[in-house]
Image (cartoon, rainbow, N blue to C red; front, side, top):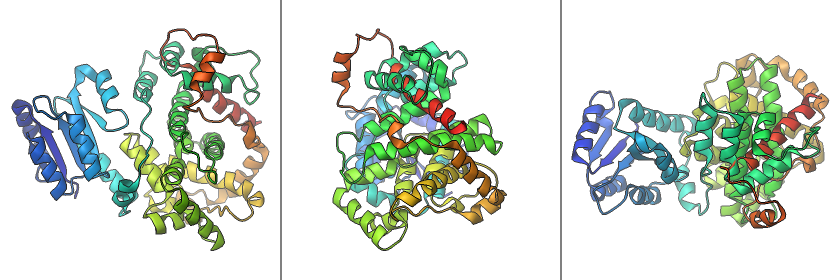
Length: 450
């Protein structure tokens, strides 16, 4: 393994323990340990450390401040903020979005997992000039502050619609959006839903937490809206692909977990477009126009100009958020699945097929702007190449609703207005918005299946 790591801990006893742990594995020669943040920064400048793990409790610099400097110097590096297991909730709050959490005391399992994530990123993203593009980006969405808590609750054996709904309710914007979606004609429910917990019951926990992530991530881009690249349009396309992906996964015999991961990845598969549009407004507009004029795929044009495509940038974002590598791969390679090592159905395969079907259906009205590509060699490798006509028929039969029927993503700005127009919410943790979004997903599935 060519991955290089740095562990910083200013507690001598903890650092000694980390050294003992590292000596237990085959990657000891790839790991540098130090107790000095100044020395650590110098190491980061001089060596390509793909993983940095830090805990500072006795220095003048905090671990968060140290990792912020690492991000500026090496934006492609995976940064882990360590703290005791007894303070998991606080750890999630301080690490959310900027750095990944890792528990102490140092363990071989946790350190090896960090190595494996970096290795997976390198395998999926290859030699893409990610450092170059990330260093030029001013605005990147961070992981929604309640997402880790929500995910932990969804995975808890004691989870309930009420407990998940309570967490969603803490975010007024998300709660309001979920309630709006679940009550829209899009879902066609017989009774009105007014409580986030009810929405979770209707939509399901996995659908809710996936929708919550995507809605909040999309909302982070709401402050700047390039006229030529509609956030609403990307969101609505993502919803369509996600709902079709869930159906395709079931049709091809995928497990519930595979269908859930494919759904979540599909919701996020174009998030990189928004990062490029907001950070490189005019340049990105020119790249897309030139791609259309020269009749070349847009993702190819993006890579030629920026060093990576929107898909690869989106995969990078998900990897730095600590999301499953299967989701990272599904997003990063959804236009080029043949680069994977897949031999069976995966979230990547499902997202690639669903995205192609939705774009193929719209191609006649796209005036040549969209060039949907299906990787037939990849499908043949998976034994799915003879299923294409069946998928086309499913897509036609599904009669996907007009994009205008897909509710818009939550916005950061109108939250105050919504608060004035609605009764004062009960003092619960944030569940309403997530429920509304999840409701949209179920309704969409019902329409597709119909």
